Every structure is written in C-alpha cells, then in structure tokens.
Image (cartoon, rainbow, N blue to C red; front, side, top):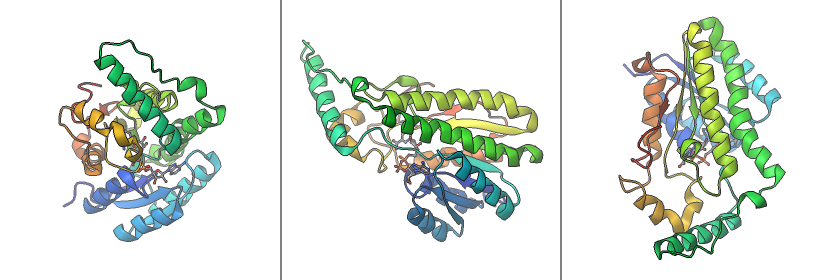
Amino acid sequence: MGRLAGKRALITGAGTGLGAAMARRFHAEGARVVVNDLDPGTAKLVAEEIGGTAYAADVADSGAIRLMFEEVARELGGLDILVNNAGIGTQDEESTARFNQKSLAQAAEVAAGGPVETHLDRTIELSDEHWRRMIGVHLDGTFFCCREGLKIMSPQMSGSIINLGSIMGTAGGGGLPDYCAAKAGILGLTRSLAREVASRGIRVNAIAPGWIETAMTAPVGDIRPLLEAQTPLGRFGEPDDIAWAAVYLASDEAKFVTGQVLSPNGGWHMSQ
Ligand SMILES: NC(=O)c1ccc[n+]([C@@H]2O[C@H](COP(=O)([O-])OP(=O)(O)OC[C@H]3O[C@@H](n4cnc5c(N)ncnc54)[C@H](O)[C@@H]3O)[C@@H](O)[C@H]2O)c1
C-alpha cells in the first residue's frame, strides 16, 4: 500500500519543477492530487499524467484562492495535504547575468586577498513592484492558502501542511533581499501556525531546499561551479530529493513532526 494511500492533496505551483515532482510522487504513493499553477497549460499536463485535477490560479490573489479551495472541498470532500510550493525567482535574465558577473568578480577579488572593489548593490536597485510581487507570491500566497486550507482541515481535526522555504530563509544570500525576506517569513509563519493548529491534529512543517535543478535555478549560469563547490555533496539536488522529503512530511510516518524545517541541501547548510 502507498505511503499516502487515500489522502487528498493540493500542491501549488505544481505545473513544473519541485511541485510537479511532488505531484508525481504523491500520486505514485496513492494520493489524489489537485495540481495548481499560474500556468493552466502545465497544470493540465501534470494533472492528466497523474489522473489528478488541474486548477489555474495565482496564489497571490486571495479571492481566486478562496474560490479554488471551495472547489477543492466540493470535489475531494476534504483535504489531507496542502503543499505551498508556488514561487518565483529573484531576477530577470539580464539582471541575473549582471549579478552573476559581479559575484564572480567579487569572489576573485576576495580570493586574491583584496582589495574588494566590486559591490553587489542589489537592494538600491530593487523596485517597489518587484519587492511586492516577491512577498505577494511567496508570503501572501502561503498565508492565503494556509487560511483557506485550514477552513477545510480544521473541522476534520487532521491534516498536514508543508510550506516551501529555502536555505536562503536562514543563511541569507547576498543580493537576494526580497527572496530571503519572503522565505524567512514563511519559516516564521510555519512555526506559529504549527503551535496554533496542533490542538486540531494538524501538522505544519517546512522544507528548505538547497540548490536544486529546476527552471528557477537555470539562470545561475556561470556561478554554478562555485555553488556546487560550496555544496559538500558536490552537486545540485534533483527535484525528487525534495519530493521524497514532502512524501515523508505528508505521510503518517511524520505523525510526531510539526513546526520543523527539513532541509535537503547536500550539506550546504548543516543545520536549520
Ligand atoms: N529550485 C531550487 O533550488 C529551490 C531552492 C529553494 C527553494 N525553492 C522553492 O521551491 C519552490 C518551487 O521552486 P522550483 O525550483 O520548482 O521553481 P519553478 O520555477 O521550476 O516552478 C515554480 C512553479 O510555480 C508556478 N508559479 C509561480 N508563481 C505562481 C503563482 N503566483 N501562483 C501559482 N503558481 C505560480 C510557476 O508557474 C511554476 O510552475 C519555490 O517556492 C522556490 O522558491 C526552490
């Protein structure tokens, strides 16, 4: 019998990357999965592949998210697992390339013993719009989905919520202030909620991945060898490395686990 046999799951941002890998593993372990994504096309493809349901909605839109959860409650008759995975990267391609060049130049200056004359200067360039969208998708989105998901899970007196943080939520990442702030916020939300809803038998945990091979990390380009060298296991992770962590936290194997951060990161960060 599958580790998630009979469970009903909703995964946000599951049209590609880590979310799609989780959707496939959840299905293989016996769960019924609703595949949310901003992109209706990718959500539909994954849902068709696993015999699930696709639902296109922007997690940063509280009205759309309320409607999605109402529909999920009608279709599935309850909800056992919610994975708040939808997310966006920090920069467009052009600014990523510029940022990477600066990072490499700065690393070379440090390695040469200085002086350091290259500065990342990301925060002073960050627009209000960019900051708000980053916080909107990650932090508002996680909150909106937790709130609506809890409306279904609370009367059930059971459920497992998994929020996607990042090693950047605790370690900090120079030049990624918006992303790091959003991910740190998600860890705080996870711990507070875990205490709040424990009395209802609902568990809330976070996964904080290290560097994983997806579209989100593709733009790292030239700095990839540096990131791999900083990772004791010497490589980027595969989406399945995260999907297996999610299967565990979603399953009854983790029935005594709440308020925790599980961080598959190849040793990049030794403790959360
Ligand atoms: N890949 C990594 O190395 C890594 C590391 C740490 C944390 N994470 C986190 O894991 C999660 C998944 O990342 P990924 O690498 O699979 O990224 P990805 O870009 O491959 O996939 C993200 C998915 O989320 C969807 N999405 C984006 N905005 C959305 C919105 N507003 N509403 C609904 N869906 C939306 C996208 O369409 C896409 O399908 C993110 O929260 C990310 O921050 C990723």
